[in-house]
Length: 280
Image (cartoon, rainbow, N blue to C red):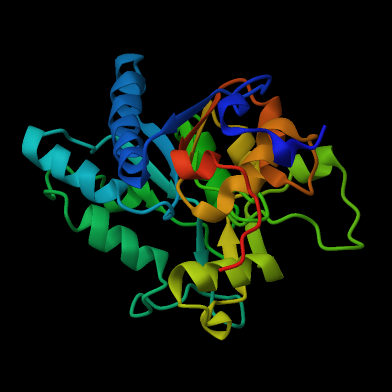
């Protein structure tokens, strides 16, 4: 079966992972925000002292909504531990890019989440964590200290990556088990990720995209109790089909989620369209 030819109305048929198709980008982002708050409340209701989320920067828009809801309704996130998925690094791979850089993920979450929250409702500084290039072990140590990851949220890259866990390069041999065990670490972005990130953020300026990043590993993602994926890019039409219906393989990193017990995909209607070519 050619998975790339699966029509929109059959996209949820036969997949091991549930998928919900929403009308547009706004609906996907609104659902993302609602899920964050609902999952936080559910974890607290189950008796969790600290609720641990792995959270991405992309898609964008959900954090503004969450902050506004918390402020309006007095919802405290003081018990939330946020492990950000990844961050771009300086050329030597030893530090984060500066927050003065518009591509800084630190900058984004500060401007659109922490900085918008009433300080009395925000997670304290010690519960806001990015994977550090010189101290990658801090992420698994924090996860163990706070009792595991309740939910890992994420988007999907054009290669099928989750966080910056790109597929192995041509000629690089790694089996499924070894790929699933990859920990938090420094990575070099694939050519495909550099290109698509430049299209998404920099009007095609590939030279502007940092080559290195610190990322949580597949080990931390797959070890989360729940995984929730949100897809709102028009160029995700092909990769979503490979993830949902193709073989489990490191060549499509998110396909490994087929082995996870609690995964859900939420995608925009246009992402579900067939990835057919059209000259423009």
